[in-house]
Image (cartoon, rainbow, N blue to C red; front, side, top):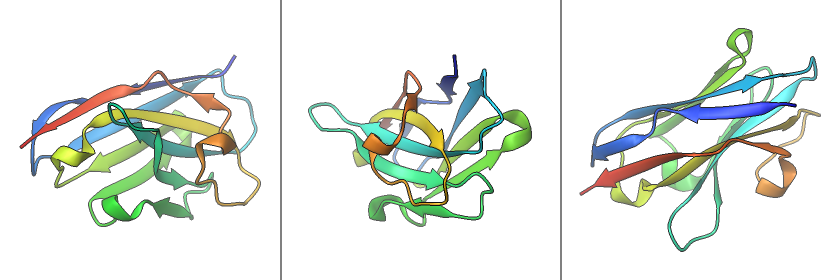
Length: 125
């Protein structure tokens, strides 16, 4: 059974930075793409960023471009989300997700089949 565990969330002030981590355990040899999503109170879950197995391809939602960076270390079965210049509207539970990588762009939550439990990020004004 594959499991994803996120960490690194917390309470910060606007303008601060946080680095989220997601570690996969029980991973098979399948190449997999990873994504970060978030869900704010009363809102639906939304795409934040995705990265291909090789790391060569990344994509971001417009509101985080230039502030967030997704990266991965396959030797450590880990993916990261570096979040800089945080804003109150970034407050949400952040989830990492994975799926097999067949070379497409995976921007929808419905394209991912494995999810972590989430980590809370709260940004105060």
